[in-house]
Length: 85
Image 1: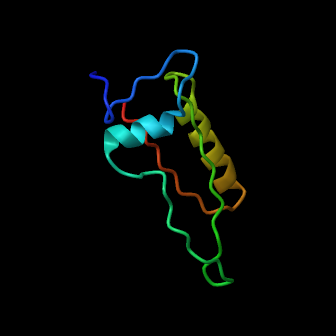
Image 2: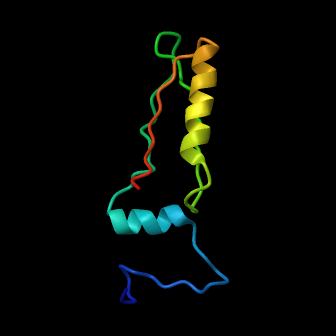
Image 3: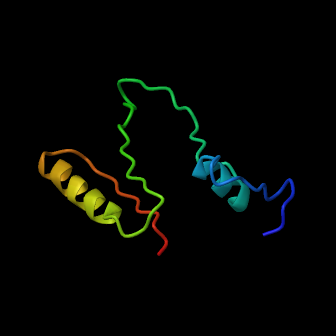
């Protein structure tokens, strides 16, 4: 990967947050969530994020188990697994 403004190089001892690099590569602000005002009618949903930069650590399994547990407790659950592997 060439060095330059589009592809900054970082020293091993000074790694940047991963989301900054991914935003640069994807070309958009995927982490930006539009602020929606909460009311009694709309209610603000709670969000859980399962995150790790290393593969094979059980994120999807932990996510599925947590979603199943919350659903059994009567919670409404939406699961989005963005592991593209």
